[in-house]
Image (tube, rainbow, N blue to C red; front, side, top):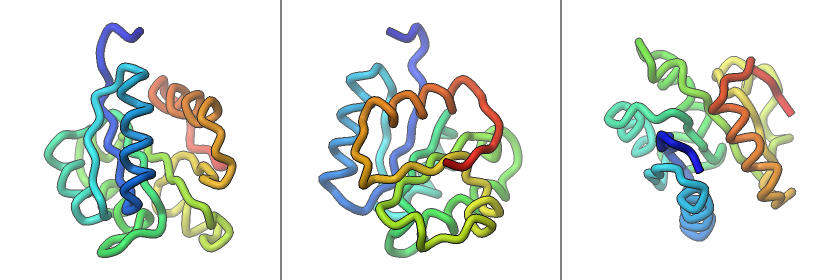
Length: 133
């Protein structure tokens, strides 16, 4: 178990996915906040300055790429928070668009591999360079 609880913001419009992911992360000892769209996610990120942001790419109001761009435009610690994007349709987003948004890592929801997801989360929280998978 971790000695200091890391704060993770989960931004996901699908309620079942959002609640399932939040429960999984809480069981891992993380402090979790959730948002149902990119605009709410951006507001919460400003308020809580999370250690990691996990976002869906396809959402109403602001999508994950737009939200990531806004976060990267901030000053200070928030602009440095790793962003993990989840999508069932990664091919809908070209590589340069995703990289330019400042998203650190991409995870295919269709893989539904919880252990790989948790490993990716721990890797991002321990500080890694920008990478795309």
